Length: 248
Length: 71
Image (tube, rainbow over all chains, first blue to last red; front, side, top):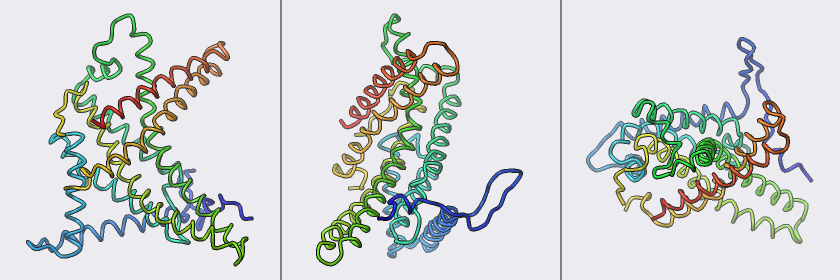
C-alpha cells in the first residue's frame, strides 16, 4: 500500500536561494499564488459593477461581507470594524486554500504547519501590538484575571501566561491537524478502494464520497473558526478584562 | 439571518474549538517546563511535571472561557 502521507511531500520545481535563504518554488507556493490571484480577481470583479440590483457575483460578495461583518460585530463590536480588511482576506485566503486542496492533484497549503503557524503567530503578534498600543503598560494586566486574591497571584500568573501562549499554538495546530487528518483519511480510503478491487472496493469508495462532502464542510468551518478566533484575540486586546458590549 | 448567527454553524465552530484548546495549553506548559529543565535549571524532571500540571490548568481555563462565550 502507498504511504498515506505521500500527498504531503513537496518537491522543488526551481531551487532559488536569496542571501542563503531558501525561497525555492514548489507546488505549495504556486498554489498560494493561484489562490491570491483567484480571490483578488473574484472580489474586484464583484465590486466593479456595484449595481442596485446585484448580479450573481455581487450577491455572493455581499453575502460574504455581511458574514464577516456579523462575526466582527459579534466578537469585537463596532470598534473592531477597522480590522475588517484583515479578517476578510484571512477568511477568504484560508477558505480557498482549503477548498482548492480538495481538487485531486492539487495541494493543500494549509496542511503545512509552517503556513498555519505563520498565520497564527502574525495574528497573535498583531493582537499584542494592538493591546499595548491601546492600553500601554496596563495591557500586562491581561495576565491577572480580575478579582484574583493576592495570595493566588504566584499561581495564577503562570497559568494565565501559559493560556496566553497557547493561543497561537491552538490556532496553528487546529487548522493544520484538521486539514492533514482529512486528507490522510481520503488517501487511506482511496488506496483501500484500489486494493479492494471490484468485489469489496466499493465500500471504501462510498465512504470517500461521504468524507469528501464532510471535508468541504470542514474547509468552511476551519476558515470560519480561524477568523472568529482572530477577532476574539484582537477583541480581548481592545477591551481589557472583557467589559465589552455583548451584542447578543 | 446572517450565517454567523446561525446556531448550528456557530455552535459547531465552538465545539471544534474546545478540544484543541486543551491540547495546545498542555503542549505549551509541558514544553516550557521541559525547556527550563534542559537548558536553565538543574531540576529535571520537576520542571516538566509542574509545567504539564500548569498547562493542564491553563487548558481547562481556556476551555472554560471558550464555553462561556456560548451563552
